[in-house]
Length: 321
Image 1 (cartoon, rainbow, N blue to C red):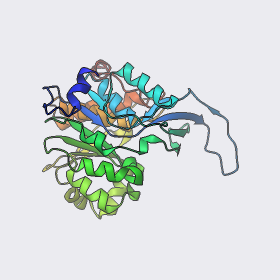
Image 2: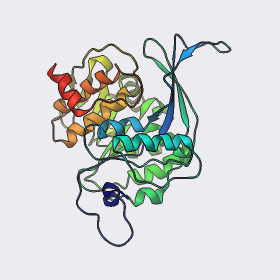
Image 3: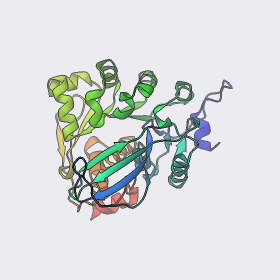
Image 4: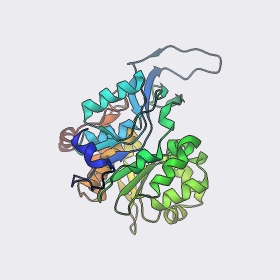
């Protein structure tokens, strides 16, 4: 067992976890991404020729990878299996220095086939695996401390096999642990009895322009969104334009983005989220943290693949240039 894992897991011997640095812990389900670049999405019954760089580790891994590439402790609390897809994830985690905090299940994680058009628009086809089966006892063994951040996605709050377990654990997090939530495009499918309590507990709520607009319409108004998430920093990602931040007790702040040639937008939002949280963990104010996140996302879209976040020194160089 690694040093970081041993300080994050309650071994049941009655001893408190030793002092350790603050850690980012992702509960986001990890999948194997199968990116296919196409000229267009075929009509029903049609056909199209695609090019692919091969399977890569994606899903909830992108955000935790982005944090690890900034040099902060990062861990995964999402279920992996015993099959070849999970083996590929473990190999990538070892390369990035990401720890796994939960036990494996017999079986394997699913896949996400992504059709990527020249404009960068993406269409997803997902298969399910053991990533949709989090175990509450595994999550309860994680020893959290002040300054830790936990990450959750809307995808895991939608599925019946994962939402009750995950919601129960998220709502029991200590008050001094941050919770960052990205509801994603499945937000309309999350039932109110799950969504509203999670929003009340959220420390940072992030989504792209369309997703945030959808959520605002569901709740009735921007003010209703603020009331539903009273203690959260609200982040609306606006692509090349950057992002709009709405801190608790303050006015909205637009933080400009950076223009880059778009190669692949897969994982850009997760990269933005991971680097933004790192900035906050580093003690930066929200504008400085957002500026780094905008730079990281701009660099990420110029690279092929979902988990391709720039490292800290690369972001520094980008901002200097």
